Image (tube, rainbow, N blue to C red; front, side, top):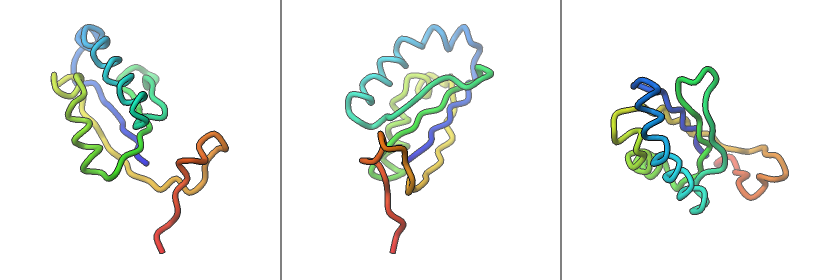
Amino acid sequence: MFVLELTYTAPLERIDAALPQHAAWLRAHYEAGTFLASGRKVPRDGGVIIAVGQDRAAVEELIGTDPFFREGLATYRVTEFLATVTAPALDAYRQQLPA
């Protein structure tokens, strides 16, 4: 599982102008089952996405398709973690520690 932390690198006016494209990108990845949760950071200087993916390389490739990233409006920090404990609603995403 991955935590994707976006940090805006452009004024909010430019972020807001690209928001419809970014929202469509998010929806497509929710429909594909890749994204589990997302939202703005407080204060509004970026966002956070909880994602699942095959590996870090695949997630980084996916990030490259985000309109915010492509347009130079945001940078990403990727944190990979093993979700060994989950809420019941996320049982399908529970992971095992390597042997």
